[in-house]
Length: 262
Image (cartoon, rainbow, N blue to C red; front, side, top):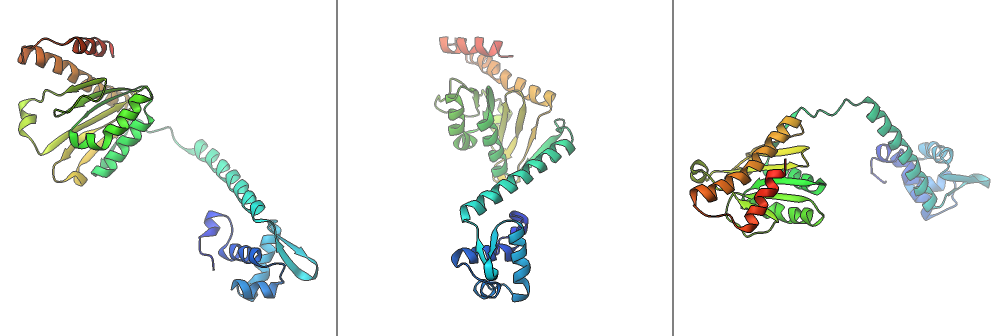
């Protein structure tokens, strides 16, 4: 017996699908023969056949012999019927649903869930990505970010620890003393296309217990983006004031770019 929850998945009962598959392996047959070869109780077989005939999946020939339509046609009809049902359902859902809850700030718990959401955001980015992350998160996300940069997305990358230069717009965060002393947390922020933000901290030794926030609230998103943008200015100021160094030509160009990136 075929057990696929077909009533839900295909609009056919398990008995109906089993009868059709059995017929494709041996036909034409009468009801009694089909009952024996399929394992469907004889008391049910004719009801099942009537259903298949009504749907046009089985043809009754002379002398109560039954033949299935070709499997390609069977699958094609099911697909067509199912797509029509899904299309109708989609229209009803669109009509019924509320406006997107863009003011809600969602909580994402666990490292794998947070990284999964971050990858989704990066893959869907069209214009820009501002991101601040530690090397551990970079291990999971850098390849996705590089792919985004290759397709024309501006990636503005703030590394929370020294790493090799990978991106066109990249700095190493001049971490303040409290951050340097606290090795138990890792900051993580990503803002995509001025439309959505994912931010929070991962707790060392309890990544899966960490809580990260995601949202599309305009003020929340733009505030987060502005914070990341100002990390670039923090980098320039730290180099000039604290390190007493002159910005390189490349850094000057980056400064001019970030200054205009409002």
